[in-house]
Image (cartoon, rainbow, N blue to C red):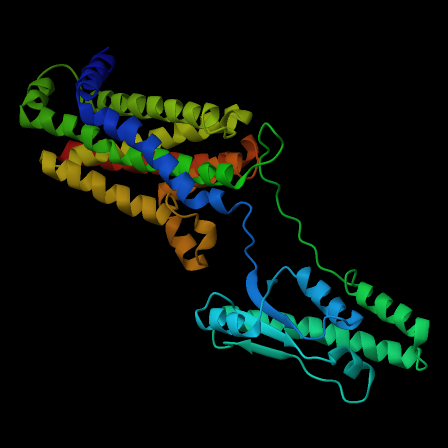
Length: 395
């Protein structure tokens, strides 16, 4: 009863503080939406991201030149934009184009002869875009040249046989005899069976902001403990039959209750409003939410014991929020960082919590993928609680 009474007292104090709602509900929702739209690329969903290349075709009446143009139009690296040479050169200078390709007059006829003409490509090969565009053009030009050479060898007399072999050679590039395929884990399906870019971004921003502002919300929780020491309630409490362990457990229970309520509300918001898949694996989500709340609650207890003033409690909470969120991948997925940064990030509990949530939301995994992150979070919870207990006993 002492533990429950103390927890009830703390909860009443926390809920009366307006900063609790700001850090626990309002700001997580606002930042989840902001980060989700910032990284979703929703506006670029139908935008062609290939490198723009200007085309000047002075040999447009030839079938071979048209074959080259058709092949480049199917490229996944460049997209062609036709125009006159002067305008395209100006756009290249203004860096609106990555390269300009000029197909000279008589290019196709020269390929069948002994002195083939060369294509003219203007590009800044010192830049990544220019180099990539020129390299892609060279690849397709080389394919056309090799196809012509093959046709000349197999059908030296030309005619219909030459055209047939040439077209067969060009088509063979579309279905090469050897190809590389990569199997990746399918993302969790939404109600429509697919996950859009925007939903995928929310699948990262939602758990990231839940965890970030759970740590930020500790400043209110820690202030309750600091104020208890400041107004000498703690000293009077120690004169009663309530033990130090019971005092710690009462504070810990209050912080855990606040954080778990925050987790549940924001998870429901993510599932019902943002159409994420938290509830597709309810047990896995519950395991990560419970262990994450336990871990952060133990961290809040440690901050409350260490802080000697309200200012220190605020400083400790905000510093930890920025450090743990930045290193733990709450802002940017650790998958896009280097191996060293990933290893450093997984020293933090936020990284393990993010792994657990993203296993559910982005990778479509279930309870079996939640146990390892949950065990890591429980380990951190025990560590933080032990340190808080040791510091509290030595006061």
